[in-house]
Image (cartoon, rainbow, N blue to C red; front, side, top):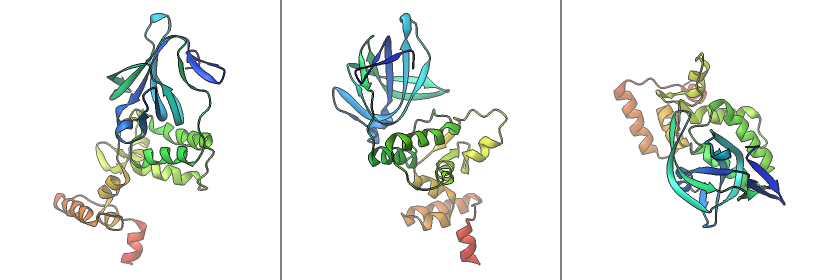
Length: 238
C-alpha cells in the first residue's frame, strides 16, 4: 500500500481510487462499530487500489490495532482472497480522499481486542497461519502492552485455536508441518469453548458448561472417536 497511501498533516490519504473491505463478521462480533462518518475496527482489512483506473490486486492492510476509517460511500459485497470468500462492507475512496489518521490508539484495550478476536477464532480465515504470530507481536508492539509471558504461550494458543479443517481434533500446525507446499489457509478456527469441547471429555469437564461437554464425550464414545489424554489426566489416573 506504500504506493497508494500518503501522509499529510498527520493524516493518511489515497492517491488513486481505492476500496477497503471490512468483514461483516467484525460487526457481528463487536470488533467493528459503524459510527456513521467512520468505522472503528481492528485494522486487519483488505484493500484494492485502482491506479490509473486499472484494477490492482487485493492486499492486506496489516494494522492490528484499533483504527477509524472514514466512510463516504459503501456497499455490501463478496471478495475472494486465497481461495476463500469473505462477505464484506466495501468502502469507496476517490483520489486524495482522507482514509484514516496517521497515529493509532495505544493501551490495553487494543491488546485485549486482538486477544479476544484470536480466542473467539474471529481473525479473517484468509490470513496465512505462519503469519498469525507475527501479526500478534505487531499488535503488542503497537498497543504498548506486554502480557509478560514467553512466546511459546502465544504459539500454544494459536496452535490450539487453529485446527485441521478435515479433522478438527488435530491441530492445524501438525497437519501444516507435514505438507510439502502448505497453503497456510486451509484451516478451521473456533472459539475456546468449541475447541475444548472437541478435544476430549476430560478437557471439557474441567472447563465449563459440563452438560454440553458430557454430551460431546458421549457422542465421541458412540462414534468410536479416540480422545487424546492430557498430562493432567495422566497424573490424576496415576
